[in-house]
Image (cartoon, rainbow, N blue to C red):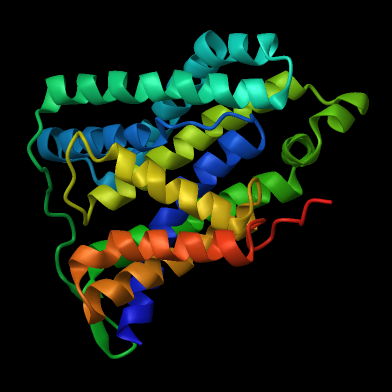
Length: 288
């Protein structure tokens, strides 16, 4: 039971990162390999605000998320939209976006190494025990999970209970048909890419409260987000949520019952299993 609860607490924060990438790829059709760098940048900004100005990380989201939204909007409009406009087909766009964001990965990583160095960083926030179901867990993990649930609920209400959220989902399903009913596909894609970056930054802020990080770790989180997106079904937010929880439980179980050094191997094993037996993902549809 303790392993399951710990895994769910971890998976809840993973879910925000994966949902961010799901929006970017599922709606904007951009495979953002610099997604993890957005997360790590948010970790460092949260650390700086907490240690320099005593800003509570949860309240810090109100500053970090809008900044991440604006930065990702600018990245899409200045760097990625020209690639979208010139792409003759989806395959060409995917290749170009992968190459472009791969370059961004190293640019952002270099800037963070220059600004913060390569040392591992952490800070003490709510570093105390919290009793849950008869066992004790880190209060920072519990609070991070609660905040992740609130953010995920807000996203759900936006996507399923607002007119523009419906338009975003329509673009994710079929951009061509969405354009025929008057939806501004280009604007929806830009919004989704920026919103995805903001969600990833929120995940980074929450993870920083209980995780030790450094400037080179972004690629690890990008890899985990990719695995979750594919496991859940590309473009499906519900699948990303469930896949994130499964991954969190799997990592926690392997770390607690076998060896912490094998968590990454377990992640890849789970990913391989999904590719072999359900390549379309949990909620993905089988291609005809």
